[in-house]
Length: 273
Image 1 (cartoon, rainbow, N blue to C red):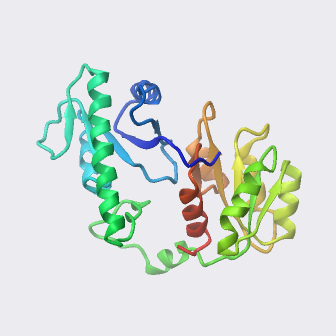
Image 2 (cartoon, rainbow, N blue to C red):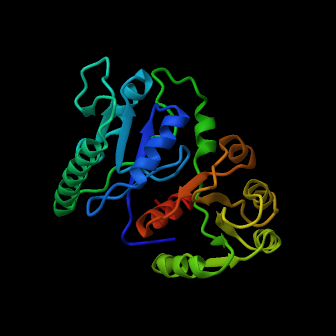
C-alpha cells in the first residue's frame, strides 16, 4: 500500500459524476515518462497536489481561491470560465495531449516551489479547512471546544487480510513511540478495541466485510478509548459519505498512500500534530 514512488493526487471540483469518472480514467492513463496522476475521493483526508476545476461551475471557481496555494498547489480550469481568473485554462472539447502537457508544467513548477520551501526551512503547506469559514459565526464556543480532539496516546489498529501493512506501519511509527496492532477479522478487531486503548483504527475495504458496520462496532466497543476510524480505499470500492458519517468514520485515505501522509494522518488523529 505504501510506496515511495507515487502518482500526484488530483482533486476535481465542480464536475458531474459522469464527467468526473471520465476525467479520472483519462488522468490514470497519462502517458509516460511524464507524471502519473490519480483522483482523490470526495471525502479523502489527503490533501491534493493539484486541482482541476470545471470552468462552467461558479461554485467550483469560487472555491479555488481558498484551496490553491500558488505554485505549491496549482490549479487548471477546464472550459471557459465566466470570470477572469489567474489560473491556466483549456477550452472544451479537450485535447488530452494539451491537458497532459499543462499538468506536467504545473507539476514542474510545484516541484521547484517545494524545493525552495525546503531549502528555506519553511513549514509545509497548511491543511485546508474541513468546514467552510463563516463571515458571522454564532456558534457557541463550547461546541467548538467539544469538536477539538484531546491527545489520545493509545495504539493504532490495522484491520486487514494480512499483517504486511501493519508491520510496515509499525516500523514507520516506531520513532514516534506509537504501537501498531493487526486484526485479521471483524471479531478480532472488535475484541481488540474493547480490551485495549486503540486511538486509531484503519480498515482496509478490500476485506470481505461491511466497513461501515465494523466502524460503528469499533466505536461502540466500550474500550478505554473510542477510536478514530479511517477507511483505506481503492477502486472498485466507492465510499458512501452518508454511511460513513452515520458510522462515525473520520473519512478515508485513497490507496496507494505515502508514508508521510500516513504519519501525518495518524499524528493528527492522535492530537500530536
